Amino acid sequence: MSELLFLGTAGARYVVAKQLRASGGVLLKIEDQFLLLDPGPGTLVYLAKNKIPLEKIKVILVSHQHLDHCADLNIVVDAITEGGFKKRGILYLTESAFKEPILLSYLHPFLLKIEFLKPKTLYEEPPFKFKTTSELKHSVETYGFLVFLPENKILGFLSDTAYFEELVEEFREAQILVVNLVREKSLNGVLHLSVSEVKKLLQKIKPETVILTHFGMTMLKANPFKIAKKLSEDLKIHVIAAYDGMKFMII
Image (cartoon, rainbow, N blue to C red; front, side, top):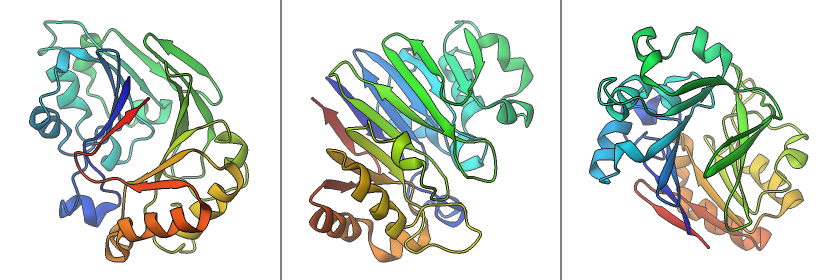
């Protein structure tokens, strides 16, 4: 049985800076191994609070270099590898994030492997198998992901992006879809999804379960739980608003 653990559900600078929601990213557990997606500020603390065995974090996946997605990357790599004494962990990130750089150079040899993400590419690190989408519409190089689960289901992660019609085909396969929903309403020039845009997407792809996360201030004011309930009623889809520390079992 696979499991998702939401170490944090904050998105956008104000919510992260004020820690109105935690900002630790998402853990996927398959068998007894973990994939850590987007280790934002405080990830190491949230891993400790949830008693996650660091040596079992096999894959670190960074969708892009914005701080709410990678601020704790260096300390997490150091912790997983016990300061380099145990060579562990495989890091996937964009080439632009690597060049930023978001990972200090002395940490590079601590990891088993560092690999750049490319569009529409399949990656396998058993028990994890995932592929990237085409590049999303964000201010830096960013990808979404489709993870192939042992339960014969596909788990989609829709990271930060503006809405564009190709998202329908990119995520049509996903039975479970995790969506970064930063804004209640769209704002011209802001490259993040809004409620109406997520609704438009879900009307076309109809996954079994949708989990909303990565909330900005306008979403918190609007109440993510009420928005999820309304989307569920309107679309006849199981829509959940994630909360910090939430676990979701995949069966």
